[in-house]
Amino acid sequence: MRIGGVIIVIWLLIGLFAAFQRGYFKDTGDASCAKAGTVIVTTVAGPLNYLGLNPKITCDVPEPSK
Image (cartoon, rainbow, N blue to C red; front, side, top):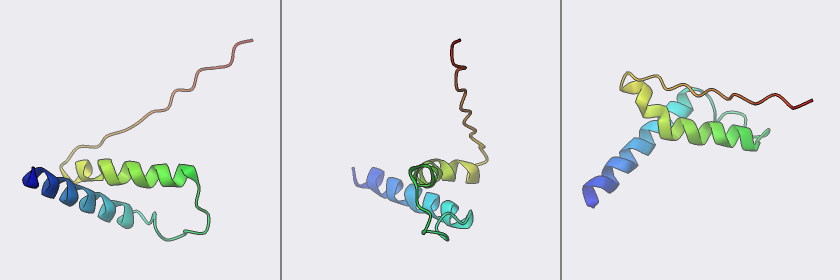
């Protein structure tokens, strides 16, 4: 259990560093849910970029019916 906790903490620290590198913590005056979501996703998935993976998320919004 301890090793898993240490790995998770290191993973999140690397993710926070990735978010910091992208400048997500600079302008805190215009905070929004979208910006918070971006920081959270970057923190969780950011280390994957350092491992050589490049995860991409697409948002396909369905067209409204007529």
